[in-house]
Picture 1 (tube, rainbow, N blue to C red):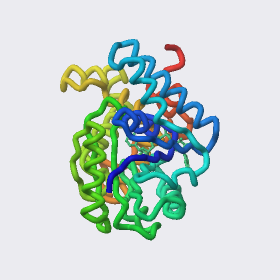
Picture 2: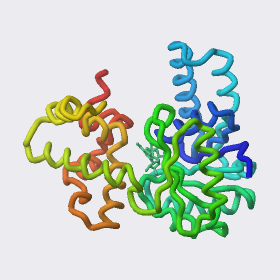
Picture 3: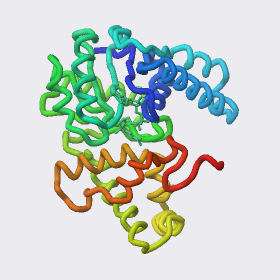
Picture 4: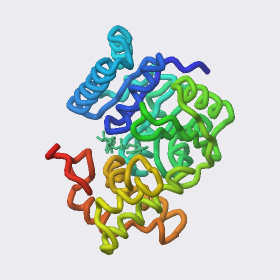
Length: 285
Ligand SMILES: NC(=O)c1ccc[n+]([C@@H]2O[C@H](COP(=O)([O-])OP(=O)(O)OC[C@H]3O[C@@H](n4cnc5c(N)ncnc54)[C@H](O)[C@@H]3O)[C@@H](O)[C@H]2O)c1
């Protein structure tokens, strides 16, 4: 199958980044948000990102305008009926994703591939909500999608080889490097990354070092571009908590058991950059 039109569902951090990546690669993009406000803010974010890139000389103005013209924001799920591939990128919640997959199965053309950008959740459970479990797989981008080179392709045990090949072709057309990973919580990157991030919160909570010293230690000591607490703020603390919970549910490994402080911060709606405060305060800058 040749993918020409890509649907993206979810107008959060990842949805808008994936839309930009797909449009930059020349695909027609239909971006579905539940509300007009979400759709507008998404297009506003894309405009800002493109203006920044033009300013920095990374893209010429006419090319930016062409890219922008390839993205259409909609609120009605039925508008995804023309898509060859839909990438779901809504909240990291299995019940919400399963419901969405049954709806996507209803509205999308029989040949369309349905993909999830989940960080940890079982792809097979979403596949089994559809009448096309062989055409469902994980296509897991990283944050921020335009900047990060890796994508994990995650076939469920139901996924056909043809679907994996089409997913790989799409990912490579987006200029990304694909790795294929079995449908197991956390795949490769998050299974390795999240115990580290979780333990950083536990260190902070036990008073071993301050926030700034923990982040400085990992930047200076390991040459990481960001400290663990900065990275948690970038990912979103609610998403991080959901990722850890899914990992803990699957493996029962104490390293995945979410740090109590992380839970408290999510309860207090300190979700990181997206809410204006997390381990750091973003409202002052
Ligand atoms: N944040 C990251 O670093 C990152 C990286 C890779 C993958 N992911 C994955 O991408 C997906 C989206 O994460 P995000 O960081 O963009 O989250 P986000 O919180 O920024 O956005 C979530 C979006 O889902 C929508 N939403 C919430 N509940 C919904 C429902 N019941 N039905 C439909 N839409 C709903 C929200 O309105 C919002 O637009 C998750 O599966 C997450 O695990 C996140």
